[in-house]
Image (cartoon, one colour):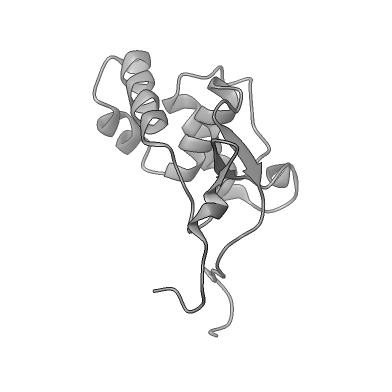
Length: 130
């Protein structure tokens, strides 16, 4: 439920879809689980393990392009010779946001997307109750 007005047009700019990304965050202390998810995303996508990403793509209220998701799943299947669901699920520690973000940036070089780090909603995974 939205508690205040929201313009879905914020997900598009000049025909490109918004890709949430926090630049370089994984190079900082902490974020250990996010680094694991990023490595597992690279592995699922068949990206050379030496090519690591320090960017974080995890947020809520995000947008993905359907054709990009389909192409990403096809790449995973080609890289591993089996269904993408079994590839992703076999890692057990994964983030769909990381897989999509790494696919867009590392495989497509950002094609069809623009980066933005503004979070559209507040999320509290840990810490004191609100």
